[in-house]
Each structure stands twice: as structure tokens, then as C-alpha cells.
Length: 316
Image (cartoon, rainbow, N blue to C red; front, side, top):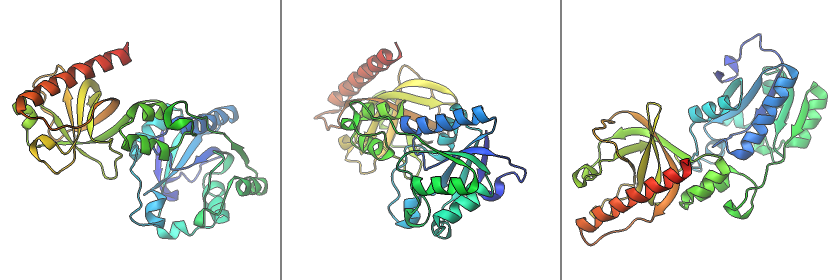
């Protein structure tokens, strides 16, 4: 899959293509429907499928300080899009100048002049251009002018997660923030993931017999609510069952919020300095302070046992 940053990266001889545009944070099941349809149309027409997205998140430029927690960094989104069959991802640097581009100019400069859109596939609430003035009706009107088709895909409605609301990144972020990683998984179609480099912490887990990987997460990462979770620790392509702790470690009066993963039944791991990923499968319990270290160790052992059971049941 080709990855371009900025319009100037698009090959000069680029032909017609099927395009879809959006932040696509998380590449959740609603996004998968839209992107999947774009890929399907591209295959029918014998042209490439292109996803156009933005960096940084538009809200950070339009309303500085309002950057939402991210469900997936751009490299992860690109991996997920590649799995869906996307041929190219165009990341447009979202600057103040770019934010002032009118909807008509956006269509002309991006969709027509550079990507030569044959079909544009979007969700019903798609907005674009300065002050989000462009909508799907305007996009369809522009399509008639510039000879491209616009296809609108209704998003499926989620089941139990969020009380039957349509799939959305906003809903997913709320569920993650509440610690409802099962609900988030229902919308994403996979466990929520955080990534980062393993750094040295206080090493209390090692002293207690449960050494953890202390993950320094990427900026703006959507991190689940404080608590203990079952999931996986991904290292160099290997997924290791893990018990995961998120919080400030109240047992030791710590103040820094951390994400720590204990690889179940693995010994002697040296992960310092490695970029790893942590997948959150299920909530185990909230964060607690215990009366003694002995009680803490017993609780951790119980957490590991419960995490192992949840992971085995999911994989069965």
C-alpha cells in the first residue's frame, strides 16, 4: 500500500481512483463499511482505492487544545486500512491555511486535480471545507460538475454498546474512558489498543513477583479508565496473554498515571526500549488500595488467574 503525506507526494501520473475522506480514528466497524465499499467499487472499476485523512486532528487546529483522545495512531490506521484492501492512504497536513479551504476548492484541489476521483464514498454525516460548510449534497452536486459519482453508506447501528447508537469514534472514546472495553470492542470489531515504548518504572511489580512492562503511551492516546484488565501484550509480532493495570498505583501513593502489562506465564523478558502494543480485552476490577502488601499480592494473583480465564474463553 502506498502512503503519501501531502498532495505533492501523489505521483504525477496518478489516474482515476475511488476515494473516501475522513479522520477514520480507530477504523471502527462503521468506518470499515465505508472503506470496504470504496474498495469494492475500486475493484469493480479496475482503479485504486484511496483513503484521505488528516494530521493533526482538525479540531486541534480549529479549536486549539481540543484534540480528542486517539483510538489509533496513523501508522496503525494505515495497517488496518491495508488489511481492508486500500491501495493508498493520503495524509493531508491540517494547517490553519488548509482549514480555510472552501468546500469547492477542496473538491477541485484534492479530489479532481490530484486524485482524479471516479467515485467518492462517504457516510451520511460527512462534512468538509471551511467551517465544515460542505456536506454530501454539495459533494454530489460537485460530482455532477466534475464527473465523479458520490455514494453514501449508512452506518450500522451498534447492539448493546452505547444503547444502540450508530457506530462512531466519539462513542468509542467514551466507552474506553469509562473502562467499558468490551463495548468499545463491539464497535471497533477488535480490542482497543494502546502503543508506546517500555520505560523503567519503580519496578515494584518485579519486587512483588509480577514484573510489568511500563508503557509510555503515545501523545493523545485514548487510555481506559483506572483498573485492571485482561488482554495481550504485543512484542515483535508475538501476542502474549497479559494482565494490565491502568492508574496511579494507590497502594504506593503514586501520582503518575501509567499503563503496565504483566505477561502471563512468561519469565525473563527484557523489554526496555522496545515499542510494544497493549490490547484491552475485558475489565477485571477497579483500582483499589489494600491493607497490606500480602493482600495486594493475593489480589494480583487473582487478577492474573481471572485474566487468563477471560483470554482463554475468548480464544476458544
